[in-house]
Image (cartoon, rainbow, N blue to C red; front, top):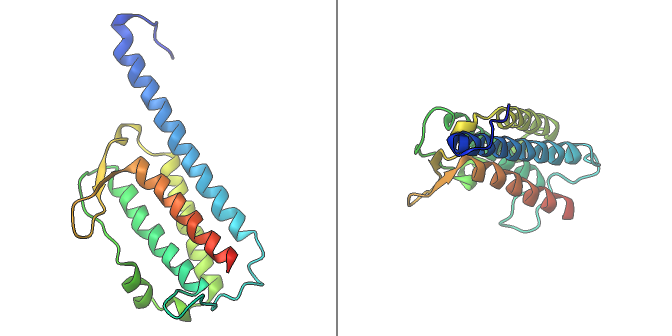
Length: 171
């Protein structure tokens, strides 16, 4: 219900507008995420050489999916924890995590299913994100403090996903 547009209700109207904009932004990010991973999973995955490496110090396509699984796990934790706390630190050591989890030896179907399910959970969290948590931040810096808002982290997650999926498609 919209309040009458007068000076007395101006703060409530601004809050209502910010809340509506935030809800729309998070729903759009969640929608973009779902479209991105669904389109990729519906592409011609069987004809990919999942063990292909573009160079000696590069990840295989399978390891890239593993990296995206790690990214989904770390970001899901950031999104969930940001609903009830702020300024916490969650970092990710990508090379070490990919090596430690031996994605190169994993079944690609299992990896893709895990990745799909993690992303479905992220979509669910983002679609229902508490609107009053827009400005909550978490520290993503490894060697120095680097606070990021949930909205930034959600959009960055989708951008990161697109970057790596394009690399899989191109190679």
